Amino acid sequence: MIDKHLMKLRARDVLSTEEEQVIRGLISGTREVPTKTTIIRAEQPLGVSVMLIEGWMCRFKDLTNGQRQITELHVAGDFVDLHSFTLKRLDHSIMSLTPCVVGIVPHSRLLELTRTQSHLTRLYWFMTNIDAAMHREWELCLGRRSAIARLAHIFCELRARLGIVQLTSGTGFPFPLTQQELSECTGLTPVHVNRTLKELRERNIVEVRHGKVVIHDQRALEAIADYNPTYLYLEREPQ
Image 1 (cartoon, one colour):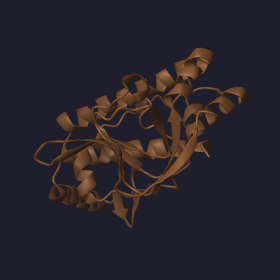
Image 2: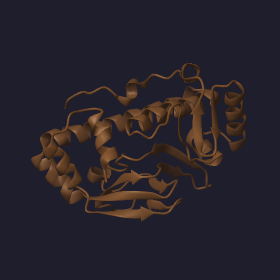
Image 3: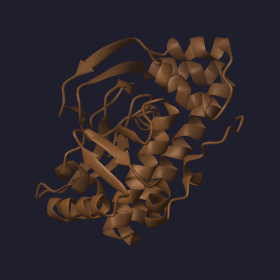
């Protein structure tokens, strides 16, 4: 059920059979979430965290005028709000972008893990640090990268993250976002996103079609994005 989450952890560290069983035991139950459903709202008191088993989700913040900024995309295997264990409420909301299946993790079980599993506690702390690193990279994209570099960077990052959990196929991967949602990730208008995607397609670098990204020239895409994957910490670093 949580195999993709375990793949994500194993990419960074070694897990014992006992530790894998402890992680599986964190889940108290599962829930199916329809598409475009806000499952956590900002400032809502929280006693559980959510692990994404299937589907795509996002973190977002809204302005009072209705404008939305997506601050992170979540794919299968992600602990979408592990940080709520210590915060108990979030400053942002979490929404499904596709139909999803999530695992419910009571904070009481996370507390017990911190008491009895020092290695897993360090590993999950490490994973939240990676999460923060991703936010900094997105901030750099929004503040300093050009429109085409922003889109190129998202595609590079997603290919790496989806590859970890075996959701890529050759040079492609699923991409269920609409151009409106992509604009909310990149701080661009939908018209600008459409124009930029057209440029990438016409340069035979990448194209988005039928809910899938197909990369024709990975090297060119990484050059446009000025992409350096070190912020994802993809090498194994025992905690």
